[in-house]
Each structure stands twice: as structure tokens, then as C-alpha cells.
Length: 366
Image (cartoon, rainbow, N blue to C red; front, top):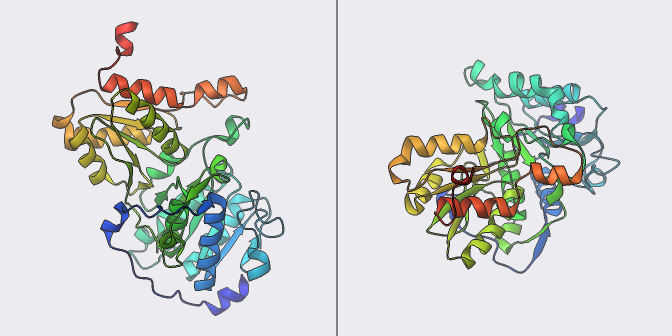
């Protein structure tokens, strides 16, 4: 890392894709790629294209990543660009931010974003605010990435969703992939971006395989930041979701279709900036909104989306907005309680039916 700091090689120019391209469906091919492979390939290609890009974090090198996301990168790029760090999130995050000040493009991996709590001062006060406080003279091109949200049986201190936390902070961009297409395209966009990006992955999705097209596999593929994707078009109710909850929402939509409810499912992809235009356009078409997330209900991503709809599209609503979230408690360790505390497919189905007046509201049955 010291050697590449000394060289301070500039990044090659990249041409941004037109904004409208975000709504295209790239993944129509039969080829399959896991999220793990998508992230690994994106890191590999960006490191090959730009010598100022480097990866740092706990066990990213010799162990090849806690979830094997960085497999093969140490052997290919060496220990100066794949840097194993001590177990000190505040320390190595600060080193990464300083390297970004200098003009490098660090990718800082947290073994889990729960551990990034130790580095909040570096992420928020140093990375997010410096461009503003320097009157735009200092850019901070850094990516903070790692698993976020609930896994399975790891307890309250390893299961929190930080989408709303980081999404509330000016100066940060917050991206959350669902599919392999998302993971490749969004991570490439994050690495190329001149601002700090928080990239929230999901541990349970690393091994999931998704179809990808030849266009997604192209080294130049990139998804514009701030553009949601309509995963399923519909006309009766809009469902917004991110990360693992996109898959749950698509499952719920198939069940709802059997009852004659045509649900539109929006994969948010970007929490900050939030694609309010796509969400509002969908609600103005379906006249109903259901938001889904694993995080806590109070001050959540869904609450922000609901506020946006009330401000911009209130007159189009034919039913009260529905929010599906995690329970307002630290996540339990016991498997049965853990399941009860997290959104399930059946919760989404029930809420969508309430919005479409196919079942009695909860208040009416109390």
C-alpha cells in the first residue's frame, strides 16, 4: 500500500451510462453467478483497471476473506494492494480514509457492519463530511463494504441493519445489492465514484446464484447510483424492498397473483440517494404502497419512503400505506423468536391484501 501511495497513480476515465439504462433488465441469460463471485469479479476488474484501487480489512488476504469474497486477489495483486489489518476497525478505517484523501481508492471491508460501529467517527466525521468542509477541495473516493443485517443465529450484536443509519447522513452514498447483477454493477459504480460509498451486502445471499447476461459480465458494466429497478411490473400495489427482502417480495407477489392481486416490486438498490421518482411514479399507477425492510420500524427506510409519498403523491393513494419491518427489539438468538422478529413472505402477503381491501385491517379484528 505504501508503494502505491508513493506512485499515486490516477484512475482511468470511465464513461457513465445514461440514466435511463437503469430500468433495463440485463439478466436475461441462463448463465448463473453467485453474489460472492459477482463481488469478487468486480473487485478484480476494478483493481486491474486502476492501480489506485486497493482492498483492506480483517482476513481479506491470507484467509481470502471471512466469506471468501476476496479469493485469489492476494495472489494476483500482492500484499500491498490486498492488505490484512489488525482487529481494530477504527484504526484501519482511518488509514483508509487518509489514503482516500491522498488520492487512492480504498475498499475497506468490515467482517460485519456491526463491527463498523467502532469506526463511526472515521466514516461519518472524516469520510462523509470532509468534501463539504473543504469547500469541495478534498474528495474522499472510498468504499466501505461488508455484510449487513440479519444472518442466522448470531444474536443481537451481529444482526443489525444499518441502512437507515447511514442513509440519514449527508455526504455518504448508500448502496444495497440484491442480485449478482446489482452486486457487480453497483460495486463497480461505488469504486469509481468520487465520494464515500457504504456498500451493504447480505451474508445469507453470498452463496445465492442469479442469472446474468453477457452485458453484465462485461468489464465496463456499471449501474448508475441512485436508480431503482422494477423487478416485477404490476398495477394493484407497489412493494418497495432492498437486499434479501426483494426476494421475499417477489415470492409474495407470485402468491398474490393467484388471488388476482398484481403487485409491482421495486428493488431500491440505492438508499441514498433514493430514487423517489421511480417510487412515486409506481404509486401513482397502483395507488397503494407497501414498504418492506429487516430494520427497526422507527425512523426506518420505509418511514422515509412513506413520507416521500405523502409529500408528493398523497392524492393518488386509495389505501393507507403499509410498512413491514423487523420487530422493535434487539434480534433474539433463539431460532423461533428470530423468525418471529424478522419479516416473512406471509407478512408481505397479508399486508398487500389489507392494502387491496382483500382482508380485514388489524384494527378491525382487535
